[in-house]
Length: 262
Length: 326
Image 1 (cartoon, rainbow over the protein chains, first blue to last red):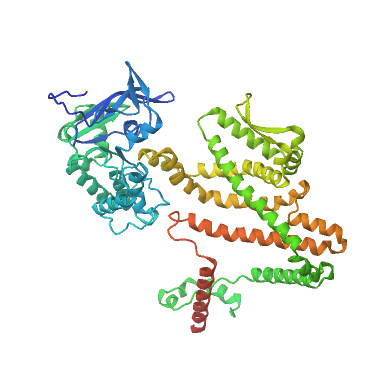
Image 2: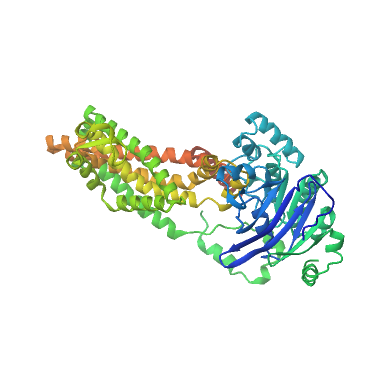
């Protein structure tokens, strides 16, 4: 499935190589290959249980693949080469790698006991990237960018779902990640709040950040995606520009799925 | 208040024809009368008054002797011992509890088994047995040494000098307390949403930071009320140190009681009141600690007793004015 187009020497922003993953006897990912170029916006579609969330969680090593490997910006994630085999890295190194990969959860998972400002400023301080005042300055700037510059002192539960998710995006941005993964960022939101979150993601997409977005918002996919990937049964069934995958799907299962959600 | 219950009933039974909206908008809704509640309240008040009257007037309690003993230096010395033993054991017990809970939740089966066995053992053996065991510890192990396991020792302690009564009491209570605290702490950690662990891991926060700044502060919210329960049990448990010849509040009361047998009842009252004061102090601290950890967990913080009293009075005043106006 990987397309080796031109002789490009810059490393791919993300490369998923023949990844297999089982939960017990159930096979969730069945040989997934995916290459994302820097600055590219990839939208992953698929029915529930198809393995799209697992794919995202394998990318930042929240889940370990049984077979295959992932690299981000040319660096293997969670493992290192040991002769012709792969060896698991120590937890400390994996944590450092994760700090370079943004992750936005469906349920926001903000830290409820910290203010909005501290939620965003915590990670750069804890990972030793910035001093506390610098991190807070950055947090204020990022919160302003997602339209929440006036709510820095609030606690997450005092915010609406849409506002919480925008804080979560600012929190992911605070580590200046090379790539950001979104796991159904609008699925837990009331319909009228979806727009404000999508607007922030769209703003990121146009600013050239590499994004991988799992979502059910087909309209949004058509608008922002450079590439749409359709997953079913743990395999990539079809991928390509939205104009092809969404408007002229080649596979029966893609047509079936789009027919149901559109 | 003066309306007979019948008035409300007749309104409810009024035929639907009278239910025109124009008529209803003018009606004030009468709160439901609860005569049963008033009767029970009256009975309880009478019983409480009787108990208080009995406490105050029954010569058996000898309140003058209570006053004599309450602030005696020997009682206060005992109180200091009680406070010392309780405070040290509370801190050491909680520390041990956190370590044991982490052991129970660790990936290593050996650590899990050791933590489980410890908890099982010290929850099974009565505290008094543990204390008396430790008191006779020097008979079991003549020396304690620090060194390579099964190898040469670097430092050797003479057991008889190490095991002062105070140390025996604190160690015994801490060992016991840690076993219970570990379950309290473990329950608190398990109560933290899995998403919090994931978010902390996804941000790449260092492992120690994840526990200290993200998971544990949230766990403390549910640990606090349970641990305070433990703490109150511990404060009362300190009365057992009397049996390892340490004179705490209860110990002083017992000794004085055997010297002045006629004063045993007022002396027991002295101990009772001091324990009441200690647990009340702990409850006050608990309220403020819980309020502190509730930050972010609720949209508004629960009011302090003073705020509650103030809003209560304001509401009562408003209600009285409303009733008077109608």
